[in-house]
Length: 334
Image (tube, rainbow, N blue to C red; front, side, top):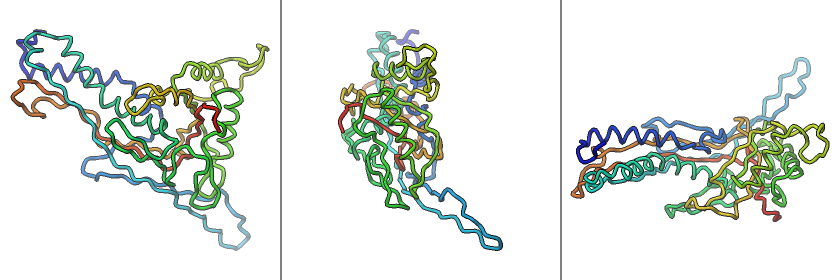
């Protein structure tokens, strides 16, 4: 392709194809993980969404002959309001790049452009776990982001409150061990005993996801437990491995990063269990504007003689409660 002879309209057709290819190449691990319920927000329906939960007591009561059946007890849970952010980036294809036929430089810019919005969304989703031991964090734009659950507490906490009882629940494993067979069994006990409805009753929801960072030791340990045909800690090859295929292993490479997406070794050993079941999962991703490309016709022209292209997207994240996920920082600290 001769850049010095191509028209802007022909170049825009090529740019659009490159943008689509680049967008499709982004794995969007967090969005496609199943951990987030995705809500596509129609245009013209407002700039916020409110999410809540309503629980009923689980068990029917004795009904004596001729008596009225007891009415079910209903408890409104916590509420969380989602508001969106809009993200974007622009690039310019300069006159010099076109006249010099610098096809490789142009291609690199357009491919990067198509990846930037989905990459940012995935980072923001991952950072709900990364900074889940705090109530806020400062993102790459310098904005302080509130990431509390509906009870006003951090996502990972030892005493989350409930609306219909004075009981509390924890979803951060005591002493924060690294992933191991013993730690996984303790984490499973946390799932059984600390997954509660708003009345404090046990929720027997399926926790089907084992999540880790991309740390090799954590990944290999998880794979060993989930894929071995025998007990990985037994010398007896005939020993049954109770964990084989018990969970889907999700590797979340952006969890152990800082606000800029740079490696953060202090989060290296984060791991846990999670549920994608809507019975307990109350974490939402709202999409107001899917990632899209803007052309010079959209962005206007100026005296630079650049052909300017951009990308935009608009989305929000809300977590109503922390009952759907359990976590250990892997630091061994109480």
